[in-house]
Picture 1: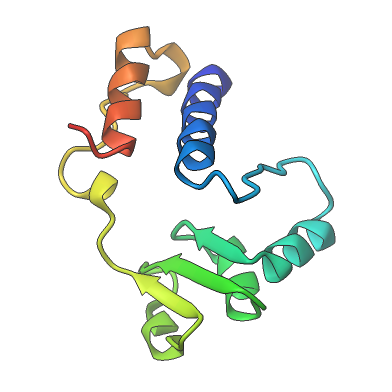
Picture 2: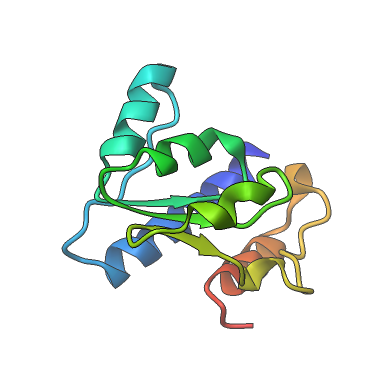
Length: 122
């Protein structure tokens, strides 16, 4: 599983760094919770998946936050303001999926297909 996610994450980071060359794009996966929350609140731009982990830092954000609409937090639409955006159209979740049935045993072809779906080129 880690191998598959690692490939997808590396590709996403390359894509974001190439698309936004003046931005600092980074992943912090093994830091204390308070540090992670602080980093998200103070980020100039924060993009959140549909989870509650990122929602509360997004609400408190000092920068611009983009939160995926989710049944986990149906009230989020009422929170919209100039720097807080609710994203309702998630292209990768509409109909196609990533095409990986078992991430632990993903083939190179499945990983490449997932990269193309994530980049919107399928």
